[in-house]
Length: 407
Image 1 (cartoon, helix red, strand yellow):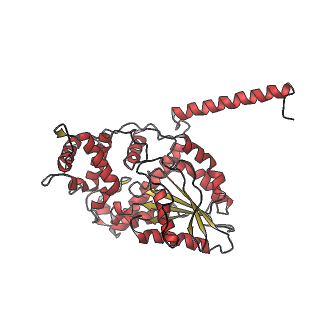
Image 2: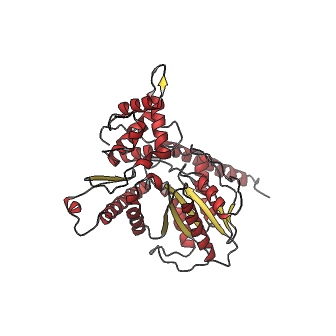
């Protein structure tokens, strides 16, 4: 990201997120299917690896082989992890199949579905998957589905759509939705989404990672999550987000980037964020005291991308040396790649994606193992909790010694 200033990473981990993370292991004991929702534009960044330990234990307790994720020793009840990549309409279609194959190669125990909530067929396909799982266990009273994911990836919207698809007749909107993260702060009551077989689903709070870290990669991760409104509004300056977004869109399509539709006719692609924002303000009539309001233009630009910015992306297979798909995948073609070497372009792209996924897993494994990968706020909270426990133990010991224990 040469030339683009990326703000340091911001941590946002309110109490309701920490509480849900603590109760997740007990909740999984009542769960048959985990639907993990991610954003197709950030398919790696929107993974929450802090939840993986509880999910791994859940699979082991249900009979899955720890050494072979695709093999199960016993199958008394359903235990499936389905990853749903939402907003597939906002990434180029040419990368969907190579990405799906790359993920299947790395995570064979996960089912991967690429969806768009705007398309009834995609919602219906997901509903059919859940119904098929329920029918595999005809003696079970019901199938319980838990929906997990980062903030603002569309969990509540998904459940409303599934309810509409699975229950005949007009259905009221069951869950409130919002463009801002953090609306859902506790586990929802069960929502029936299918009559035959009986399928219930739970909505859950969006869970951020407790600490993004201190390095450049963590800083970029924070900006990406802020772009999809996965982090509390106000933690990042809109102009900083606009600068990063402009840089990424130019990489995705340097010839005809998707933001051109926001600029006055005759404009050319630009790498200057101020020039871009002036063009957006002029085209959209964003004025303040007779001058172009660049702050409002930045907010407009980021909001446009969140909701529809990927719809204008180039659907053709890229031919340039530097290639990108979404904001998590970028690679350079070697001379051998450009010659083909007996492989088609889709196979080459899949190989590049597999390597990026592998590098991501190695890096995040290292971060999780790093004892210093904890924010100062979390360290203070831990110290306060430990001090409370120490005082309580001291009080109970003193009470027992004086004969004032429980009768």
